[in-house]
Length: 249
Image (cartoon, rainbow, N blue to C red; front, side):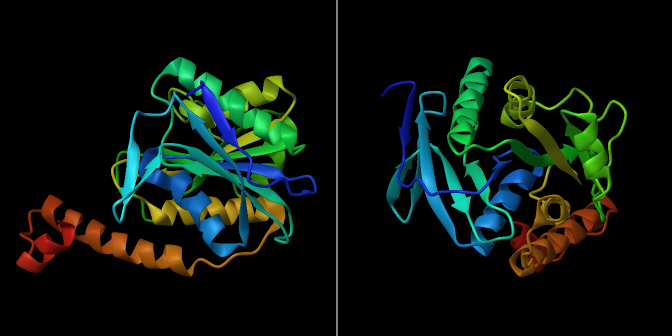
């Protein structure tokens, strides 16, 4: 296989679409948010990106295998056209992240995108009941716009910057002339966090201009609340019941 093999199953006409990225990361916040968008809207697969920079593996579901890849879906008739980038993997090394980010920006360019939202989580190291959304953006004007919809911009946070595809979509995107921002929901960093994903989506909803429901994310959040409750019980020294242990396991 070549460095990249990009399938193009569809080429719809989109009106000034925004690119929304949600790949695996802290708390799976970005991935959960992106997948929820695809569940809520009538999305069309437009690109499938295979690359030697992904881990050398296939996923297996009901015995059927699928080679590691990333997918881009188009969403229309949602108030604003969107391209949603998601998948199960990021690159395995630094150069691979750069090359993949460039490939994703090429896809955005082919659809004449000029604005990018990368979605992810920012770790707090502790359980968060009401997560805030922390942001970073490429221009002062974009920062002011996002502050108006509730995004917090904090000095020196996230500590160490933004790594992986999310960071490079901002860094490389700015060099190509894109307005780009990263929206990061506060999360513990050691649990899958649908509550943080919802917080990010609520901000994105106001920033982009679409309307969605949150029932499925709310159900997942309630399930995680039960897990968190049991973790807190164990942290406080309360022995969980056999039923609790079965649930966590």
